[in-house]
Image (cartoon, rainbow, N blue to C red; front, top):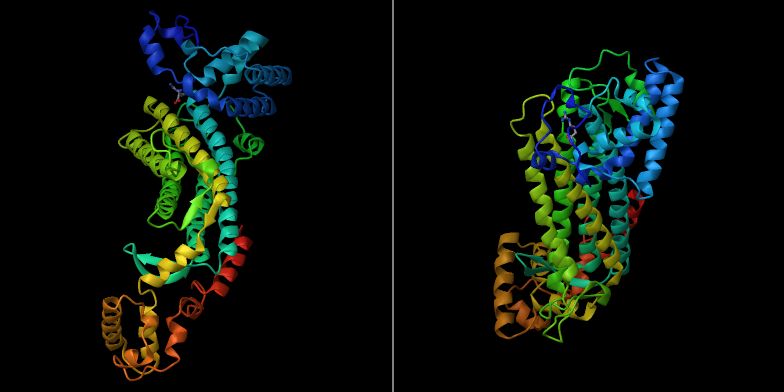
Amino acid sequence: MTESSTNQSWGGRFNQPTDAFVQEFTASVQFDQRMYEYDIQGSVAHATMLAKVNVLTMEESTAIIDGLEKVRQEIEAGKFEWLIALEDVHMNIERRLTDMIGDVGKKLHTGRSRNDQVATDIRLYLRDQIDAIQLELERLIRALIDLAEKEADTVMPGFTHLQTAQPVTFGHHMLAWVEMLFRDRERLTDCRKRVNVMPLGAAALAGTSFPIDRNLTAELLSFEGIAENSLDAVSDRDFAIEFNAASALIMTHLSRCSEELVLWCSQQFSFVAIGDAFCTGSSIMPQKKNPDVPELLRGKTGRVNGNLIALLTLMKGQPLAYNKDNQEDKEPLFDSIDTIRGSLKVFADMVPEITVNSDNMREAASKGFATATDLADYLVRKGIAFRDAHEVVGKTVATAEQQGKDIAELSLQELQSFSSVIEEDVYEVLTLEGALAARDHIGGTAPRQVRAAAKRARLRL
Ligand code: ARG
């Protein structure tokens, strides 16, 4: 990028050129050039509309549209020279257009302002990004459903307080992750509705004196609606904040899943292994295989949370309508988009490379008195009040623990010493399979329920 003197797009009232550092400091072209495609789309629609309402002649409009197409080709070919002196993507493209097609290029900006233009560009850009993110999210959900189905019978300890609580299946655990991600998908779908509203026509802030047809422009750009109020249209960034909030929750979910993977592939748990392609070694300890991908995903959550706070703070206290502050919306937004897309991609690629160590999970599940609740429920079915049953089982567990046994390993006589209602059939509920199969309702961990839930989840995709 090279520099030039006074910015000719607005230089008319100025006597002195912009300070060189101020020019650099206030420019956004370094980061907003990534929206060039949407800037051109918006301009093509605007020029088409201006001809329809006879603000431009057909020839003028056609010349502008053809010129914009050439600018696009130049950018795509990597031959476009972005100039800091031209401040942003909008003025860079407009200047090049005018260089190419002559003075008629200057007519493109009739009836609009960079204020409604930039708001339109961000929305068009974000709309496409949301669609791409949804595809990655769905690919991840599908991979998790596949894993859940494969491991629908695999028993593992379920935890509360990270202490063994009750047995669950690994498939059930995977479907819990799936539910989080389905909510994320829903949030993005909802956010997209408010992104997909067209600011164009608001011009600088008050609308324009030209007889524009906003409905036509909106239709050409596939917007679902047009912004009702011009002041709001140029100043609103709620949609970007909303997207970032949805992104922060996606990262929060990926971070939680990542933390579990990190725990599970430690030597202490040894529940799963992650494929070599997703791990790294240590330069000093030859035995190490580190779960870098989930660790990094956990870490990247921080920057997306930070971006959310940046955008909220950016908007707080801003008077209507457009303020230059709003230029600061782009870098946090773009960073969140990039982070979310990369994170979802790597997680979706990694899930099929997770292998499950079912023997270790079973062993862990049979160690922590995971079926104690089942014994209590059994006593209740034999007529004992739950609170009393809880007490009985507590004593049973304490005794088993002293003997270094699981409750299922105590003899019938030993069990009967705690409660006379216990009979031979108690062992059916004390096994891990018995405990799993007993939780046989929608949302429960019984393998047949996990299979049914996986099937329903697939239909929701
Ligand atoms: N680069 C600016 C932004 O990102 C474009 C709009 C500038 N408008 C203005 N009146 N300075 O917000």
